[in-house]
Picture 1: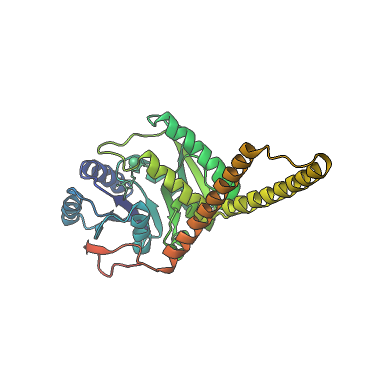
Picture 2: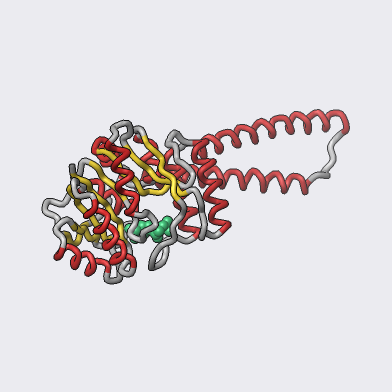
Length: 314
Ligand code: UDP
Ligand code: MG
């Protein structure tokens, strides 16, 4: 049995030695499995690649794929999935927030045969800014209401899955990628393992508030048409309201005669309708921009350097 471990790394020179030491320890304890460690260097600007080359020179299980620039974690994970050859495949972050020590337990659960994938979710958000937690909670609520990709609150990308699931993910070749949604969308029986939030060992997080906000919006538009429905429904309601008001004004004028009063309300109405139109055009624009990006069929990532023969490029 072979286990592939995908590790997306972006500017992780400080965390990588600690991570590799821990992964090495854990995998050596699991002596009846063969391992493949697929480190994906996502265009790091620090010494990440040097570190990976160094690991690879000492350990033949280490394979690295280095991108020509930063393509983002989603692309890095996709490159990993496309190149993983194991019977089981795991994705984990390089900062030890996804503890490698959980791996033996995860493998054990898959071995029992009942589940196709073991996913992890954190039950605490200790060490995270309050506002970020609040928005995250809201996002999961909305996402689950509006899409058929069920996304569990606190779910991490840290997962171990069987070959079938990896193949399903590789076949989802969309360029607007949202892995949390993709994992849920492909289905398969998933066991949820819970653990307390761990803070990263070294280095800094690559996320800021606006980055996360954009990511959550991508999540919703990638897996749901609900925003388009909102646009349609609000358009319909406005038309209906305008019709009722028209009748009201008409009857009032016949009964009580014409008067010029009422321009402030008119201004408000014009502004309201105008705003609503921009809002709806914006929503439609979001989807059109997604279509635009998809139709270009650009590669998901460009490999600049690797020690893997016949590396898969997608
Ligand atoms: N990462 C990446 N490309 C990026 C940003 C992040 O490959 O453009 C990697 C990063 O090196 C780490 C993982 O994705 O292994 C998670 O990143 P981070 O710890 O910054 O995210 P957080 O844990 O705060 O959600
Ligand atoms: Mg992290």
